[in-house]
Amino acid sequence: MRATSLFAAAFVLATGAFWATMLTDPPQTTASVRPQIDIQDMTIKAKPEVGQQYDAF
Image (cartoon, rainbow, N blue to C red; front, side):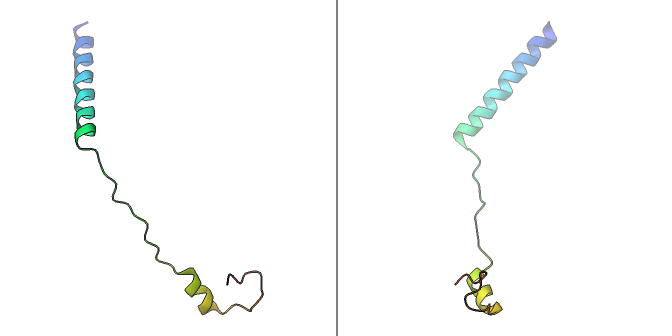
């Protein structure tokens, strides 16, 4: 019984610490989208025949 009580107390303490951290200083994402391929430039350099189905422009 004592082990169960200690486990429950530790669980409550850990849960409280977790939520206190999340509410005061939540993690912030640093991900961003940076396009590195210029599709229009690639198409122009490939010089597709005008009017073909794969001609995007």
